[in-house]
Amino acid sequence: MRPHSRVIADSRAPFLRILFASLVVISLAVLTLSPAKAGVERDLIAGLAGEAEPVLNDKSIANAERTKKLRTILSSVFDSQQMAQSMLGRYWRQADAGQRTELVGLMETYLIDVYAGRMNSIDGQVKFVIGGERAAGSRTLIDSEVHRPGSPPVSVAWQVETVNDKAVMTDILVEGVSLVVSQRADFASIIRSQGGLDGLIKLLKQKVGG
Image (cartoon, rainbow, N blue to C red; front, side):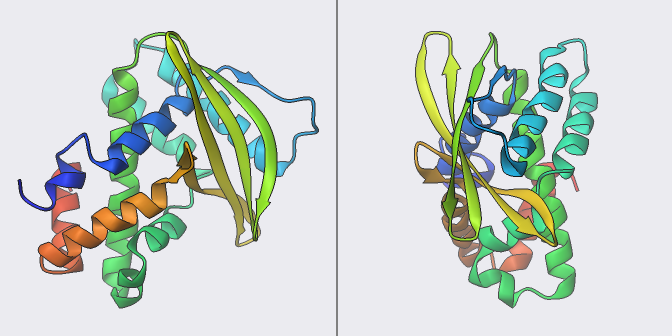
């Protein structure tokens, strides 16, 4: 198997396993807030799930339209530049301005397209229960559990931080495993094996049709 297939083609790759589990949370979500007073960070996650639920539940919406709606919803809470920077690690510092612009857009589109595709294949209702929130340095983690019919609960923590005076989502941890950390290793492997950042950009363009 070619090195880049771990992310782009193989659904068993750590990134896709984590993304699938975490994005189940947003999809078909029924929110149950704990008695504690909801803060800005919790409101952000609750609002995201509340907006996504009717879109994901409405099976009459065509796939392309669903993807468009989800992109609009996520763009208001998802800091694509911060996540791209974190996922690329030291390679972000090596990228020029043009590469950074391309990578931010391509990575956001890729994540959302994977999200929409995975959600379209899910049947049944999922219950999303929001727990407490805890500090992680300058960031806040919103703990939650995902309850699915016939399956054990999945522990999901949402990382929220303030970027440019705005609360945004910058990572997802499923059963303690960070999406950003897992994806960073996969992207680094692609960059090393495909001739640098331009190789990653080329593969992402092929994947998203760009």
